[in-house]
Length: 95
Picture 1 (tube, rainbow, N blue to C red):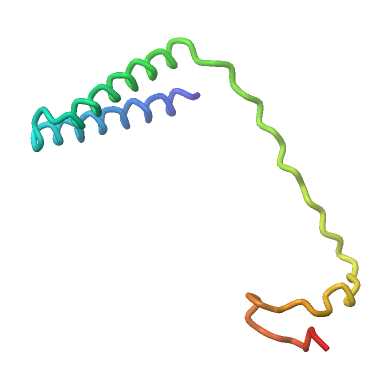
Picture 2 (spheres, rainbow, N blue to C red; picture 1 turned 90 degrees about the vertical axis):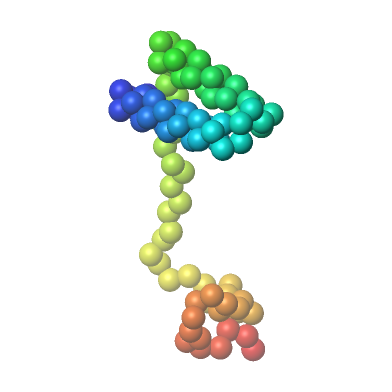
């Protein structure tokens, strides 16, 4: 995680803290507000722990590449198929 990612996480946690504060102002000491505050504190602890000792990064896995040949395909394989979703019918597909 880069420094900008950590800064973004801190910003998001700050925004969440403000939102939960607004809920407390509006709904008081409701059970759900207390749970949200507890969740926020756990998030703060986890974020600080992550920043102090980040886990090892997982190497990016290359995407599986599917090669589509440019050669002409066997038209007989498509007989009976519907052209649904293509928006046009260049020729009849069913006989």
